[in-house]
Amino acid sequence: MSEFEVQHDTEGHKFYARLDGHEAYMTYKQVDDTTLVYDHTFVPQELRGKGVAGTVVNRALEYARQQGYTVVPGCTYVRNYLQRHPEFEDIVDTSD
Image 1 (spheres, rainbow, N blue to C red):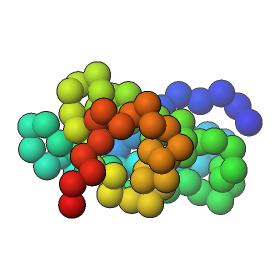
Image 2 (image 1 turned 135 degrees about the horizontal axis):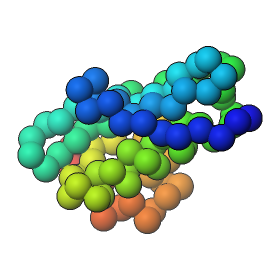
Image 3 (image 1 turned 90 degrees about the vertical axis):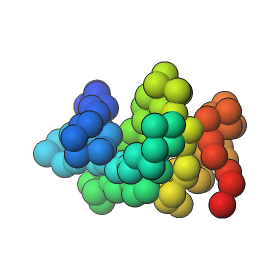
């Protein structure tokens, strides 16, 4: 797999990576001035199992931390990622 960079599309509300002609992404919604809901993660079949989703979500979480946002994990992949990466627990909103 070739190296890739995660991009942030602020107007489209997504973090994404393009590899080998395919795009993996994670979309989000901004709830208010301090909260983002990470609501959908998608990786095409051709890129699955290569760590692409984890890299995209990690970059999105780092962005939230740098900007002072709290993150609501709105999709299964993000919830599972956060369980495996407790270093982000300080920015996660676990209230329902």
